[in-house]
Length: 177
Image 1 (cartoon, rainbow, N blue to C red):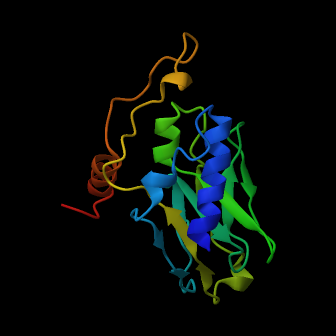
Image 2 (image 1 turned 90 degrees about the vertical axis):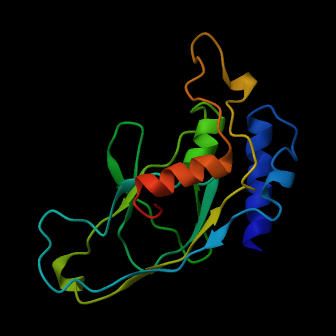
């Protein structure tokens, strides 16, 4: 159901970008998507300026996030301010990822987010989150879409495939050698 939901979100985004509605369909079928449970363990000693997850954008096309347990997730707005992002139990949060941002020449900007530490009275509790990262097939070209280039927004990125971009990012993060 998460893949199906993501497919319909991407269809809407394709229309927004002036593409054929089903543009992404073949790229996400049997792609490299992953449902990743994340456990943030209880805090046992006072952190020195650290957060549970530093500010970042997700590598993929889009991320679907069901209501996480407790506060902590923050997104950066267009003014650079951090705002709490809390989904209700029947809501879904959707983040634009770096691949889609790159493909759209930043017409759709990657959602920069972080996970902050809880208030001191909640340090002894865990936080759980289960994001669904929608990745395309490795050979999808992430070349900047022609209709996202104009004289006010020239091409900002070199041509690359989704697999090459993923590999590059995983190496930068030290998750792959």
